[in-house]
Length: 268
Image (tube, rainbow, N blue to C red):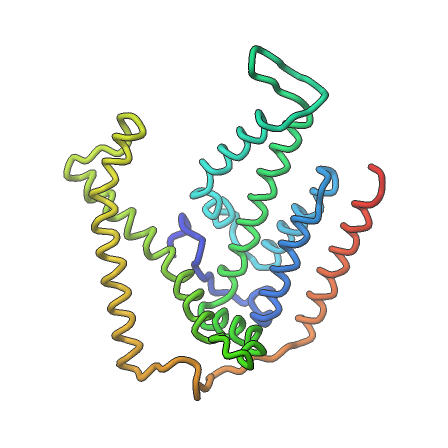
């Protein structure tokens, strides 16, 4: 596995987080996202940071996967930080020159929004790193199965989402290969202005799209040759079951979220 690309990859293991039911991990991930959005003050924001570090520790995921999950987002993080730094209004002025105005409230907002995005990306990457694509599909399908009464294609939607996640690292590796091949032929992706750089990416994007459509066609043929017809009449080799560790993890995270809500209401 390429540690430089963590989004959509599965890291086999036997940790506590790996052994959790996929339905539990999906639900807990939704609770974790809610926690990140519930926090409104920077001091309390340290609690989700501690929670993320604890999850990575219990999942026995190397720190390199944490940074590799953020690598594709680095420019978005910088852009978000700068926009919030100079677009947010405030009363405590640190620096002012012509139309540039930097305030304490803007700096806090910039740090807060950037950290929020970091926690969301790194936290959701734990789900794919500790859950195999098959287990993730089964978990999503089970959670959406009550919607079948409304003729909702739960299995098909879960399969599409899992395939999309699974092919993210594949396409990123394919992009890296094509880019290196073009550089060996003399292509330059670093020099020039933004328009010249965008134009230089055309020799990369065209073969990437061709490769993506070819892989999709091969996958469709492989599924058809194995008589795949969706979730109708489908059986599973491993049935999903909740265990005591799922209940304990759920109670701990609910208690953690309750503590954050209480701290948010206290004057700090």
